[in-house]
Length: 358
Figure 1: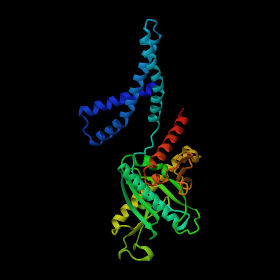
Figure 2: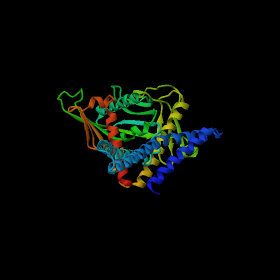
Figure 3: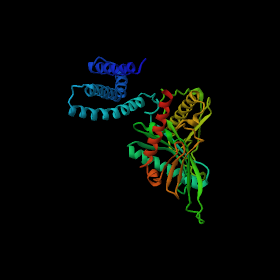
């Protein structure tokens, strides 16, 4: 099938969906929702196709006018100026359309479970993990997303050992998926009297939130243990066995949840995290099957890979996957400049995908 034939099919399908929905003949509400979603996805694509074809037709008309010996000089001069502008615009529209036609990650529209864990570096690593968590909270606020902490284990001095967060909103996973990996910080700790720079790290995992339709967990495949929730220093949070530990036997994935006083709520949260981790593991396996060497891929999600360094003495943030350095450390940690890094990673990923299909 030629490119033009594929574009014709897309335009025809868009028109078909428009007629079906306008006709009022769809009695199944689920089918109507599915069609509405497909129509909404095709709408910007069709607009781009129309823009491209109009520009190409106009360029063709102008080329004829320029070549016509009967055209007066003033008209030909105006046509040449417009033609030059169109020869610049058409490739831009074509590239935009190519990107829109790339296979979409089915998880892009999903909410995300974000997990932050302190790595090497002791208390300084835990403080850095807390900085990252605040960065993502500010980033979520900037985008109008809901940011809900599901569980957190703090150190008592402002740091966190680990935390799990549910972030919900529009295209959350699409914007956050490149954050998975090891984040490294270089700075002088407040407790360091000699002014020496310490290096520590925290690990970030971003998992697409999985619905029950995405991952069905059989009762026979899980073991649920309950125990008494513990606070800092071994103090009992309450006197009932409200904490929950769920083990997924086929994969060995273990999730613990104790932040809620209700065992039922802890179980529900644990199952949500478990589904996300299983779904992420399945996506990882599929990606590995498609590409053996995922290290060459931007945003591979390899949690053992050092992806970014936050250097406080120099006020810079460097993303090692795309050799990008921004001297905007404070703005990145405030969530303001994080979009610049995400946009660059997205563009690099799109360029790689384009190179694979051309």
